Amino acid sequence: MNPTKTLVEAVVKGMQEKKGKKIRLVDLTQLSGAICEYMIICEGNSQNQLSSLSDSVWNVVRTDAGERLLSMDGNRNSPWIGMDYGTVLVHIFLPEQRSFYNLEHLWADSKMTEIPDLD
Image 1: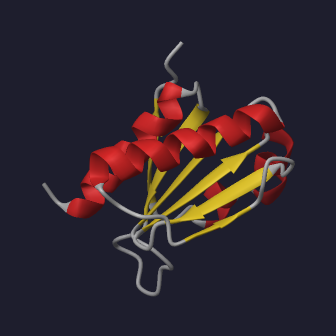
Image 2 (image 1 turned 135 degrees about the vertical axis):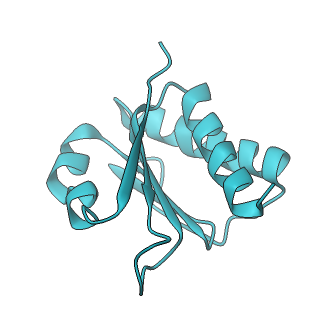
């Protein structure tokens, strides 16, 4: 399988393991000049859940995809955590920040896939 697809699947799995909500996969592969191939966005209900989501993504990506995190922005008290895997950018938001920044609107000309919540 394509390493980027494996990475995307691992990120989604990590988000779902910690009950990430409203997961959206943004496919930027058809856009010239895009900053990455895929962006994966989700939200959590509290800063503790955001930390758990980022920890889960980090662990699942490391074990399932064998990829290393290039950089991370945000910390345990942040309303938004960004994780850079090169070809894939991960954004984990509190609902208010997600609504404010509205990344889905910024990349509206790309293909978007909504991943169903696991309840």
